[in-house]
Length: 208
Image 1 (cartoon, one colour):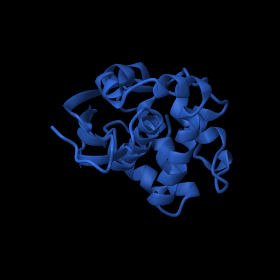
Image 2: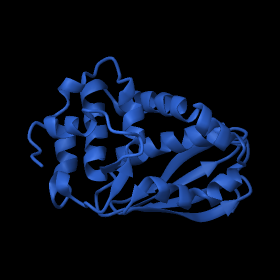
Image 3: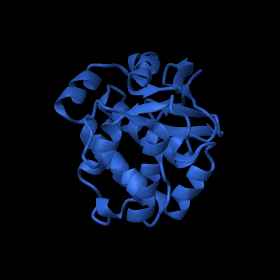
């Protein structure tokens, strides 16, 4: 797939991969996040502004259940940040609101509202595998008020910005659960794995 016309940060990401946009074909992701983020795009973004190889992912719009090549999907997310926002903070705040709306829909709200945060944590790996192929998420440490989870992926597939995007998704999910006042943060990021901390009640420490 030609990768011409990519904005600078997107180009930097693509160049960090062994085969550009064709890297890691075994890694795929459900289209639901891309669909949610681009179903009502930010005002500054016209889909026509997207580079052709990335626009092809979402025009015509895929089904939310469709599988997308993850390297291309992540490049798309980075391009949206570059083309429509002046900084990462604004992009992540927009993503948090959009993903919050997605998970607040009738189906997801019913599922997550019935779950304790502990049950969400224990079932996280299974839910990850339902949405991803070629990457993994594992529970590292489960405490009374939170947990650590590790996400593993091929080298450079998940850049720091994309991990922060996942923080917004996890935050939206735990906010809909029975967690009192949840918070999610990146504890560590490397080119091959990231560790995220989820605290269920920010007024209390996470216990190991």
